[in-house]
Image 1 (cartoon, rainbow, N blue to C red):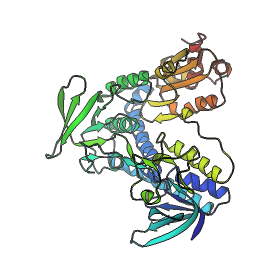
Image 2: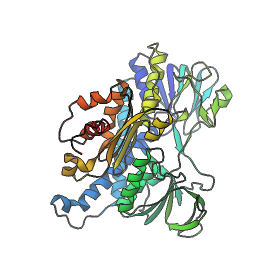
Image 3: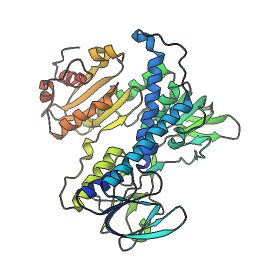
Image 4: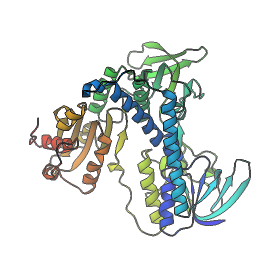
Length: 465
């Protein structure tokens, strides 16, 4: 019952850490209370993308005539869309099980709790508790939807993201509270299949408030065309769930004006809360701040032998961040002396339509940091590939330091831009300059040419504008 490493949680942080540890010769076990893969594979990243793909296909069919194809009587089967999404998630979870068997990683099913003396107590579904010893323990328990004080989630009328991808019936009207990635993705999905959607966002910028304001403005314009209503700088004061129809009271924070929105269901997408309760942190004296575990740059807590990664520690709550943290944590345990993660070069992706991808500073942040900057934009309306694909919405925006040519940031909105952002991440990691991007031959016709063209625009060398 003794291991070199026990990982509590099998999400994209936990399972990646476990596999890397096994590759490095450690005897590893993973504690999981639900399905392998955690929220990401089962209720987050993967099944949501399956839903969004169904929405995109339906949208293609509805616009088939634009491509010279006639299609009659296309209908969205909500139940089958949900079923496909769950099937994709189940397949991915089984894939993690295969990888665990391949790497001789043992799965300990149940709720894990840290116990003094580098031990983990695992309580199974029957209430039986078993204690396991480990030289090292990684907490990777992830997070859940955060409930707002005046918007309690009941799982029926006011729901979180998990319920939003497993509803039994498609709602006719939906209010989405929160306009971050989760909110705008679900808004796109439900709108595309015929649900009337209103988004309420507390921040003044409105949609995707963490992105560059130009990205937010472009998405707002596109969503308006789709029939999605956005209420920015607006708070939800209360939700009356007493009748068959929900009544959401929304208040404009600038004018103080209130309006009541009637709907069938409210989706709360107002952020996440870490799963750090009842796992023994207090008993061991592990330092936390507002439920977030405090760690150093190698993910060590203040208690020797205990580490934490992913959504339970400070930093972006993203699957790829959790995976990177897990690898660094394990490689440090193994004595490989990895570099700390550069949190300034983490890509963010939003998979609505059109997609959004960004990395580094916004234009405003670069100016606030005191940089003299060069900014370039290239619209997809000027891209041959985008025109051919019928995907002319959006643009690529790049920000460079005028003095040294350092690539400070990039912000994209358009078709498949989440597949393009890695070029920027790699280039920034290699300290590539703007002129080197201009001189790197990009294939034609491609959407990715827009990165080179936007860079050329920043240096007044753009050809196709």
